[in-house]
Amino acid sequence: MILVHSSSHAIQAERVLKRAGLAVKLIPTPRSLSSDCGSAVRIPAAEKEVCVQRLDEVGVPIDRIESLDE
Amino acid sequence: MVIYLDNAATSWPKPDCVREAMVHYMTDVGASPGRSGHRLAVEAERIRFRARETLAELFGLTDPMRIIFTANATTALNVVIRGLLTPGAHAVVTSMEHNAVMRTLRALEPTGVSVSVVQCHSDGTLDPDSIDGHIRPQTRLIISIHASNACGTMMPIREIGAKARQRGIPFLVDAAQTSGCQPIDFRKDNIDLLTFTGHKALLGPAGTGGLAIGDQFDIRVLPTLICGGTGSKSEQLVHPDFLPDKYEAGTPNIVGIAGLSAGVGYVLDRGVESIREHERALTRRLIDGLHRVERVRVFGTQDANRQTAAVSFRIDGWTPSSVAHALDERFEIMCRPGLHCTPQAHRTLGTFPEGTVRLAAGVFTTDRQIDDAIEAVTTLARAEPSTKG
Image (cartoon, rainbow over all chains, first blue to last red; front, side, top):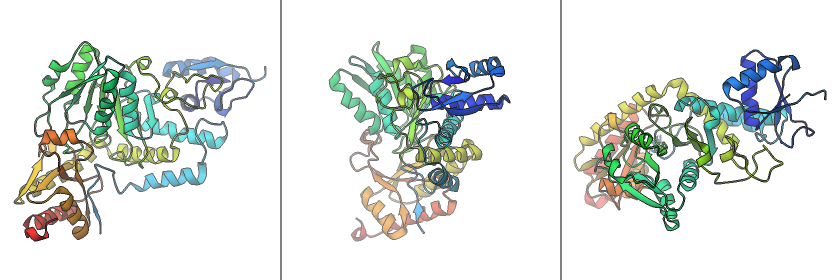
């Protein structure tokens, strides 16, 4: 799961990744991961590298990446 | 049937899609963007993001996060002016600026901010070279309105921006009158910061507007004016320093932004150039018509190629307010008389303190409505003195 700065960035990340044909879903940020009130970007673990690359190309800043099954 | 020629104040009517987008938000969405992660909050955030994208496209910006929503253009102007002008700083402005700029600058003068006003010609035009002599080592901001709200005169923003860029001084454009009806390109026009309002040519509702920030502008030099909740970084007691949250505190006017987004979408679909052509033809028709009326004097460039659709005039022997009253009462024509919140521009035009009568066509104005307005002004100009207000 990718945590971004704000819900605006979550929407931006969703658009960028969907456009790249990646299976992405916005979910409420789990309280255990962040105090933020907004959304986080859920991606398939296997696609982590390509997702990070795409977001980097467009300039969407990533706060951090967490695994959901931790 | 009402003839609405007050589009330079607020555009009306709005495209159906604006009302539909607002009804959709109120009926089916309702939530606040960024304040939760449930599907309705996410949908609200999608609406707001789409609005950022359409505005970025309109202004030639690549990063939608550089579109900041504020309550109106005035708030956005305050964010920039109060943020960049610290004690000892100097600003250069034109003599056609609106009170949203001038009153904010005057309020800062007691804190040690100084202001140079570059004099424009009596038709509102500005020779860009006349800026040069006013720039000082302490100049921290150059501000120009894109087009005068008093008489429609377009300012040479590209040339002013080039001068600002050459000297490394931020250039702020007040595009309240032009966003949506005149082409604007951040890169070509050398703009660093631009303020827009949603309820004029962008065809959105009142209570919307914002600040567009150029890709090269370093936001570290522009502090946050209004702090508060953003839905992000909630564990921190300091306001976030990233865009767009840095300049967007508090719950936004999301129903307004939904309408604004639809309005900008309409503008993009129809095309700014096509809207400009439509308004240019109407403006030419109106100016030509008014020129034919005896005892009517038109102000500004009187050239549809060098101005927006805001046309200012006076009838000899009539006060502007009595003309406006008669146009409304007798002809159902809506206009705006007086000083248009810009005493400085009217001093430049030589129309202070009475001001002028302003007729401003919009995207839905027809030739027929312009002809009716010309006929009404003709009737008033021929009226006996006893019937004058």
